[in-house]
View 1 (cartoon, each protein chain N blue to C red):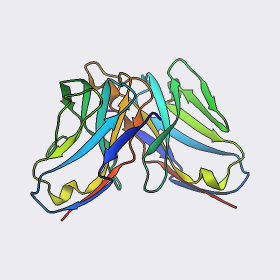
View 2 (tube, rainbow over the protein chains, first blue to last red; view 1 turned 60 degrees about the vertical axis):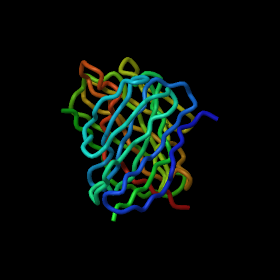
View 3 (tube, each protein chain N blue to C red; view 1 turned 30 degrees about the vertical axis):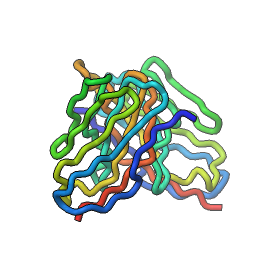
View 4 (cartoon, rainbow over the protein chains, first blue to last red; view 1 turned 120 degrees about the vertical axis):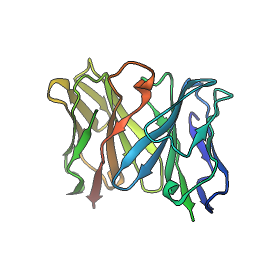
Length: 112
Length: 116
């Protein structure tokens, strides 16, 4: 089944404790990205990657890092999480970025 | 900067009714528009992608139309069912050069409730 998977689905952590949210897709897509969804602010792009080893900032990249060492994986790293990063996070992928985008199930993060 | 607005913010209808969800965008120079569905606690499911050269796109009971010149898209749901209850989002990519073409700007969504 073609899909985008994310892990973990739910995470509670404390300020400053590094964490990684994994994202994997099995559709051989070149383009992958991360969004966060917040009440009243909607969905905003954090980072995107056009291909392996090619990443760039979206609208809200502060406090996040990403890497793209393999085509299928695009982890989101929070080096020192803060409470304002409490949010619902989505990973997405598409063939090149200009086609239908497929979203993962989301990761709900709470930073205390 | 592209802005996307969805009206209404919420809609409650009885089962079987046909309904229309609206999406408007400020920059009409888009190359596609995508409609998504989001269920509580779940991710976004792509419903339809309509290219800028298309006027309509259909999938089952769903029909999306696009009028670029007026900056509008509508999602028509025929014979609504309780299972259609969800938040519906429209999204457009930027009409800009560079590499940001995959970044979607989303509307705030329409929360649809279909009651039996």
